[in-house]
Structure formats: structure tokens, C-alpha cells
Image (cartoon, rainbow, N blue to C red):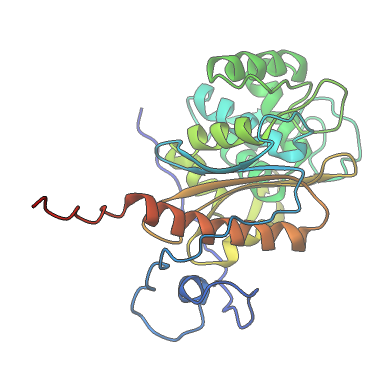
Length: 306
């Protein structure tokens, strides 16, 4: 099935003039303010100290192969917050035949704390709702897509859990499509990384999660500006995926990027602050790139036998 997708303008990535103290090799990768058009050099595989991460749990994985480079209690079940919406988006993309078809907003509770001001009876295209979902983390868009695909949020949640089983996400169970805290709504760092790997295989999903800003349009004349809060998008190598936060979950990140020769997925769950989340994620991307280079470097030739 062929799809055409309108590309949205991005905000120009702001140059970083101050970064956390990392190995000099990765600074060449992260610094976007060097003023040179030449690609940055990959980090040198010299940093061998494993990162100390404040998150309760986490994982670092090669995106293509799924090979785990680092983990911290990766199967612990915790609230995933709005990272739940990765599954909401994936299921929508797997089930919706026409992203330009209109979905009708169901009878949803108002007001929604995070949303794009959708009201019951409004109509919005699936594409615009997906953009609101993954850029703004809009709960009204999540409920609209759940109703469009599954008939109701309850039925859609059953589809989410069925898909989780198919993907082997053994430490995941969903109670809603938004990530609103509920007993029995949980995931793990490993499962979120696996889910992110699968979702990033879809070109439309990749386009959605690397969108920095957008304007959400729906009839009759709504135009709602939205901005992505994933700070990995401030770096030229960062390409998504999703953040989340509630008082129960703390800060949650499923992040993707390619700061060197291999694309990586980083997940951290229950970080104390967004600043700590970014610091830990950058440290993991640095160390992971260096670790990949160490593992893939050819072994020195053994001395010849006399």
C-alpha cells in the first residue's frame, strides 16, 4: 500500500553552546555549533566506565539488531506514562488504510489536560490526529484514534494487549490508550525498547516522532501549534521517539538516535527530572557508541607461533 506524506517544516536545530562534560570524542558529535559542513567524527572507543544512571530502570539497545549494550533492572514493571502512545500510534498505522480519512471525536471527558482542544463531534484526519498524538502527546487525539480503529477505547485497549503479546512484551499490560495512571497499566524498559524498535521500522512513524513542531488543522478552521518536548531532537543525530511524565511514573523516555555508526534505542524510566533524563540519555548514547565500536573492532592478530 503506497502512502504519500506531507513533510512538515522543522524548527532549525539550535546550536548547543554548552554541554555536559563528556568524553572529548563525543563532544565532536554533539556540538552543532562548530560552523563546519563536514560530518562530525565518531567517538573514539576509549570510555570504558559504564554510565551511572539515576533512573530506576533503563536499557540501551542497538536499534537494528536488538543487541543489548547496557541495562539496569530492565524487566521491572513501572508506569510508562505517555510512552503508551507509541503502541497507540503503531496500531493506528497498522490498521488505518487512509491517513487522510476523517475520524470523529467521540464523547470524551472535558477538558483534557493535554490536548489540541478537540470536542465531541469534531472531525480530524487520522494524519493530523497522529501528529497531535506524537508531537503534543494529545490525549484527545489518542481517544479519537482509539475510537476510530477499535470502536471504543476499551476495545482498542484489547488490541493493544493482543499486539503486545504478539511482540513478546511479557512485562507490559495496558488499561488505556493514553498512559493515564491505572492499576494494571505497566511496561518495562526492555519492552518499551522492543516496541520502539518495531515502531521505528514504519516510515510514517519515523516522520512523526522526529517532528519538532507542527500546526494541527481540523474543521472548520482550527490551527493549533504544537511542540515536541523530546530534547534529543535538539541534536542533529536525534530522531525521536517519545517522552512521558506523571506524578506516579516520574520522567520516562524512549529515545532514538544515531550519534555514530549505529542507531541506538535508549529507555529510562522514573527519572527525577527532565534535566537528569537528558543527561543520562546523552551519557548512554556516548557510552553505547563507544561500546559498539569496541565490540566491532577487529581483534589484534595473534603472534605467529615459532
